[in-house]
Length: 81
Image (cartoon, rainbow, N blue to C red; front, side, top):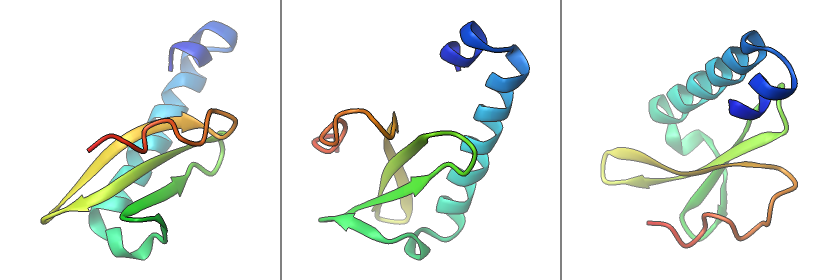
């Protein structure tokens, strides 16, 4: 959000956050509908922004491990539990 506030506007940062929250909500509502990328990690791509987040299902909860840019190191966040 800081990045979008600095290079664009507060409104764009708010739109980024709203899309992220919406997709996290979808992951919580239906976590099994997102494909497994490796081991037990699932990936959700934001639609408008070049970001995605990785999550795993832990019991009856969804744990978001990392929100990252598509061009970041692919291993970033994978070791998190």
